[in-house]
Length: 192
Image (cartoon, rainbow, N blue to C red):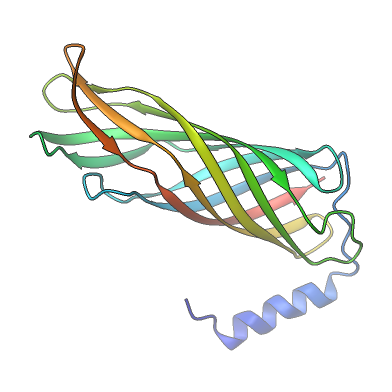
């Protein structure tokens, strides 16, 4: 993605004029609104974009927890065993986050990495009495906060999750589809 010189200059000006950035500190809370796009590991599900919310708490200057939930997104699917339709997928992620620059005054860029658990809820499955089991799996995330003001940040992230969609009909498995989405997103974070 190419960033125009005007956007870069405006971002730099905002960062310069906003004053000294506050350090990430134990006890900080934050909320984030985000836009993301998930690219699944298979072409059996359509690739869709959506919105999400996340909130977190820092136990120490560098270590915290984040809970994020995405909106319910409708996907088209096609099974190799035959059959097609739509389904809704709603991801929930609980992550332990590490901020290597937490506690450093004036750090305008705050990278982070997180590991934890994903829960994906499937619903609204169309097509010949099919259902899909909800799934749990590993989640890993890396990203960066750019401090705009002491409390307002622009955030970008990439998240990998292990997700399987087990299609069933009459209690019997019809097909297991490994999704393992890589989600790329951006949002605005408010820390207080």
